[in-house]
Structure formats: C-alpha cells, structure tokens
Amino acid sequence: MSGRGLTFRRGGTHPPENKELCDAASYTVLPTPAELVVAMSQHLGAPAKTIVHNRDEVEAGQLIGEASAFISANIHAPAKGTVKGLDIVHIGPVNSPAVTIKTDPAVPPVPEYDREAQPLDLSGWTKDEILARIKETGIVGMGGATFPTHVKLSPPPGAELDVLVINGAECEPYLTADDCLMRNHPVQVLEGTRVIMQACGIDRAVIGIEDNKPEAFQTLKAAAAGLGGIEIVRCRTRYPQGAEKQLIEATVGRKVAPGNLPFTVGVVVQNVATTAAVYEALATGQPLTRRLISITGRGVARPQNVMVPVGTSVAELLEYCGGPKDGLAAVVMGGPMMGRATSDINEPTAKGTSGVLFLTKDELIVAEEDPCLRCGRCVSDCPMGLVPTELMSLAMLGRFEEATDALDCVECGTCAFVCPSNRRLVQWIRLAKWELGRIRRRAQLKQKETEAKAAKS
Image 1 (cartoon, rainbow, N blue to C red):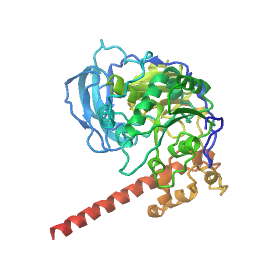
Image 2: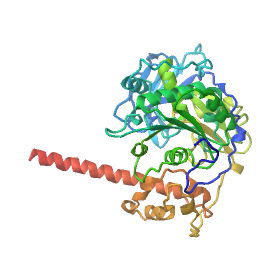
Image 3: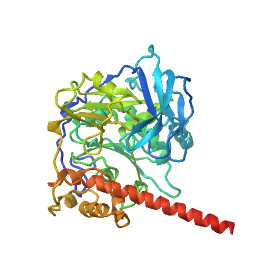
Image 4: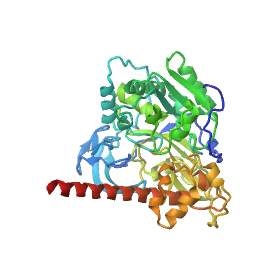
C-alpha cells in the first residue's frame, strides 16, 4: 500500500494549488496579542458553558468554558490576563458566547511545539485515562470538522476498529500548515498516532500524505522507521482527498456506505494536527489553546505559517504578516473550497481555523449565475456520487424532505467549482441539510411530547 498514486475512485477535481505562496518549510510564532476573544463554540455540538466572570484574573491554560453536553468540548485561556468582557461573537455559521481576555503585557508568546520532543512511555496509560485527558484538554478535530476528539474515539458498543487513518493530505489549495507541522514536528505526529492507537485498541495505523508534499512524506517515513504498526503512504494529489470517506478508500481500500460513519468499516480518522495536540496533552498536559495557521493569498504582504493563540483576530494576523496588498478583495476563513468568506476583520480564530486567506480580485471567480446546461460535470465529479443539480432544485422549491441525499454531501465545493454556469450548488445543498436537520429535530420533539402525554395518561 506504500506505492505512488493511491486515491479514491469516483469524482474529484484538481483546483489550482497555490501552495507555493506559503512556505511549508518553517513557521513563526505570533507575539501574544493585547486582546484575545475566545469563543465558546469552537467545536461541533453544544457551546461550552462560560465559568469565569468579568474582571476575573485567568492563567494560561485555565479552564474558562466547560463542556455542556455529550458532544461539546472544554475551552481554556490561551494566555494569562484579565477577563475584559463576556460577549457574543460571530464565528462560523453561529453567534457564540465569548470571553474577551486582556492579556498581561509581560506574557511571552505562546510556546511552539517542542523541537526536542521525546517518545512517550504509554505503559501506564489506560484507554479511559487517555480519553479523559483528551476530553480535559479540549481537543477537537483540527482539520475543520471540529468534532470533539474524545467522542470520536469512543465508538458505539459493538464497533470493531482495526485501523487508524491519519489525514496528512491537506488537499485544500493554498494551505500548508499541516505540511509544515509534519516537516518540523514528526515526533508529535507519530507519538500522537501511537496514543490514539492505544486508546482505540488498534495495532495498525496508516498516514496518508499527498504526493505534492514530498518533504513531509520523507520526514515522517524516516521518523517512523522502527515504529511497529505505523505505515506512511503516498496518495495522488486530488481534491477532496482529505475528506474522511475518500481518504479511507485511498489508503485502506474500504468503502463507507452512504449514511454510515467510518467505524462501520472498522476505521477511525484523525487529522495530523489533532494527533500532535493529543501528544502534547499526554506529554505536558497542554490544552488546545494554539495552533499552526496558514496566513496566505496574494492579498497579504508576507504569506507564512504562524503559531497562533486561539482567539487572535484576523486584523492582528494581517498586521503581523505585513498588512494588505493592493487589490485585496476577500478574506476567507479556511481554504478556498470549503472555507467561508468573512466581512469582519475582527473575527477571532478558533481551534478549527487552519488558514486565513487574503485574496485579490484575480484570485476570485466572480460571475453571474447562468441557466444549468445539463452538462453533467457536477454529477461526474461529485466524490459522493450525488446529483447536485437535483438537490439544488429541490431546495429552491422548498421540497426539503425529498432531498435526503443532501445529508451525504461533504460540502467539498467540487460541484460548484466545475460548474460552467456558476450555479450556487453548495449553498443550496447546505440549506437543504440544515432544513432536514430542523425537520428531524422537530419530529423528535413532537415524539417526545407525545410519549410524555401518553405516560401521564
């Protein structure tokens, strides 16, 4: 399985990479900003419950938001300081409670990953202890989905996991933060992989890296020599290789059926940045309060990878990287395919922020929608085998209950990218998914009310 050219079989595309803009060989460390805005919704699921008050003094790494539900995650202070306010901020698709921290001017920058990191002795760690540490330190999926990691590593009873797939594909154009992490900190990635293997009772792991990252591939392959059960494989560069189901098919040859999750084929998937965070949680108790972010695009003076504390504003990152260049037309949180544009230069970064793009007009596709040509490109290129035009039409007509296939959409943006008519396919499919979720939640609530009435009678 270690040969060149592993990939998924259906669909996919090849958008311009533009990764050369942001050098993956090294990174810098952002000086601690004077103010950090730490959102309580940095993960999939329920927001964390704020447990600090205005004018409280907080220490770096202190718990300031407590997981409030089964699917939720702890939030910690990235730096020492004083709580300046309890606010509401827009982050992602939601308005989130947030803690604004005025940092201590004497606080040094957040620590980078230890370049002298050593292998862990895992003999004294049980599965429950590992999962408890991961939960305590607030680790979530750092590839963008932000699912709480302790939940993802706790599959339903009866699930039999036998392989761990680590996502080093970083298939999004422009972004190189994961590539940078693998080149500079292979010990954290590999040791974090071993920790997750032990937590899941798995003795085999496969790390998939696209072939446009030869240095990362060679670095991890050399570092993994002698580590039993961990295989480094080279995948063909193809978007969206980093999507869970596509990466599973590429690396271990298993197909996850529509509507199912990876555990149904014995697989659990984690991002390389998540594995590094897991290593730190066990090695030092470090909570997830900072991460590598690609600050890139042709609209910023000095594109680079930066170690950034959670809660840093986009404006702070832009200033640190030399300010805007002429022609800056859009700011995107994340990559150009799955990220989202923001109009708020003060929006804070979060645990799932892998990149901030500063794009010029020349980098944007700005065009009016034309009628569908029935060319079929969105169908042939969809990696999930969906019919995007049909789902869009159902959503536009409000016939959401007929658009159940939308739930299998991974929102990779391939359909919209290849559409010659510039149809807003992803936006309509995303609306269908949201409405389907609302319909199902309403049905569940109604069922509970019916059961409660029946119990009373």
